[in-house]
Image (cartoon, rainbow, N blue to C red):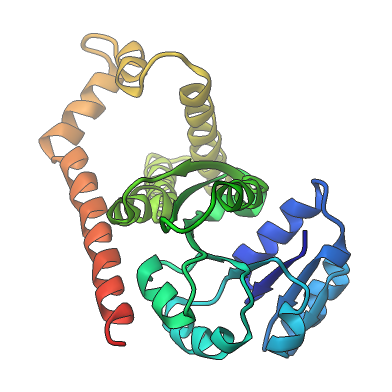
Length: 270
C-alpha cells in the first residue's frame, strides 16, 4: 500500500520513520512538501520521494495523510479535491472536524487522528475517529499507520476529539511544565542544575513507567508513596491547599474549549 503525506513536518517525519521500521519500504511512501530544505532532509534521512507538486505526489497512493497546520488545511483541501479518486484521507490537523474536511474534499473517506509529540520517539498515543462511510478495512489501515508511532484509541463520537486534544494532544506540555517546576524546586533547594534536571527527568520517567506497568490505579500508587506525617504527605497537602489538581483539570478543559473554537473558526462556511 502506498501512502502520501501532505506536509513533511515533525509528525509526518515520525510516522514515516515508524512505518519504515515495519513492513514498509521507502518506495511506498511519498511526501508533498513546499519547503525545499525539508524535502532534502526527508529524502536523505528516509530515501522517500519528496516533491513540491501535489498531483505527482499523490499519484498511485491509496492513502493520503494530511499533516499540514490547521490554518492551511482548507486551502490544501481545495487543491486536493479535484485530484482524488477514492483514497482514504487521514487528517492529523487539530480542531478541523471530519465533516468539514469531507465537505471541502467532496469525499466521505475521511478519518481524523490526534497523535501527540511522544510519537517522535514512537511512544505516542493517538485518538481516532472516522466518518460513518469509512469501511472497517479503511479503519484498520488508519489504525495500523498510527500504531507505527504508539498506541491508538477509537472514538464513537467526534465531539470527544476535543477531549483527546486536551488530555493527550496537549498533555505532554503539562508534564514538561511539571518537570520544569520540579527541576526549579531542586535548584532553589541547592542542587546543581544538572543534578536537579536529572532527578526531575528520571523521576517523571520512572513514575510514568510504574503507572503504566502496575495493575493499580494512580490514586493507589500515590497513596503507597504517602506515609502518615511524612514528607510526601506535606507536599501533597500543600498542593491540595493550592487546588493544584483542580487547576490542572481547569486547564485541560480550557484546551478542550479551544479545540472546539478552532473547529468553529476554521471549519465554518461552505
